[in-house]
Length: 288
Image (cartoon, rainbow, N blue to C red):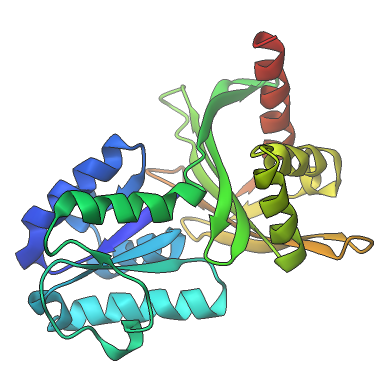
């Protein structure tokens, strides 16, 4: 789970305070002043961050609603919310101002009278997707390469979602190899209803565990990505259960990070599923 924060730089003190509180809760945030480096393309960096985020947090103030840049970020987020349901827009009101027409039908967190109360509202909204499980996996055939991963799941917007983030890197300095993979599976109404029922029965991890097992055992494990230069690879994966009318659609994005060797690469991202599943089994065995 990651959050992109759209704000006016005149509100940077509030945003820094909020960002620190979210990081303390192990929630990943993108704040341009924290992430941008000398020489980065501002437009490309921010566009990528919005596209990759699970939530777009909009800071509403007199300064932000007057900012053309903030308006562009909000518009991008709303388009993604409507088009792919890949992002949820969360407005935060920090002072009296004219809320933009296209945000007026959304529930907002009110920070005007109390920062703590506003933060509590935000954390409650995010709690449905704050189920991070972290781990490190390796490949016995490539001992010099490690992958750190996180898995989170829950209700985001109106649908169940399983989000997998993996960073693969090489420990050999002369062989730069850093690849970021983001896989988001969104369930339909039937899948979401089943998850809600599992939650009511105290089975919070059942849907996540079932999906990881299925992904590891079916044809997804043979999926690969063709990486040309720094261009990201994107594809769609579909999982159906016709009998139960359950459908999960997976959005996959794979891209290189940092310096590279200039060569094209075939990356078998499907192996991630099997390796994470084996790591899950190993953790269960250790806890017995």
